[in-house]
Image (cartoon, rainbow, N blue to C red):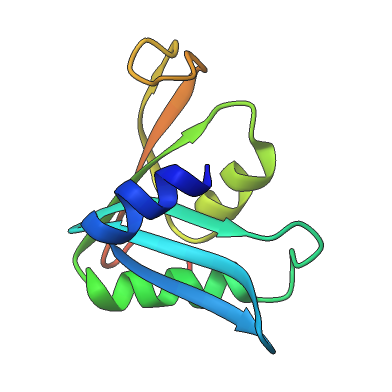
Length: 114
């Protein structure tokens, strides 16, 4: 994971971090209007960190954002849907390395949600 972040995410994507004191507690990686990564460190959920990172993403891509989430990640699904993302399609996992069934989401300016 560290190698992938250092070799792929940081050099290729627009990356933002959330810090608490000197510790990174979350990060966001954008590729145009593709929200490639949004992670919050376990133990820091429900503190507004993800919402603040998502607000940055919406500022950087104000018309539209798209992302993929795993179908079994109910916490992420609830977050995306509460923040105005709509399902574009669902897949059996043949389009990702993990072979996990996923969901393609989209947010557009004017969608319901914060």
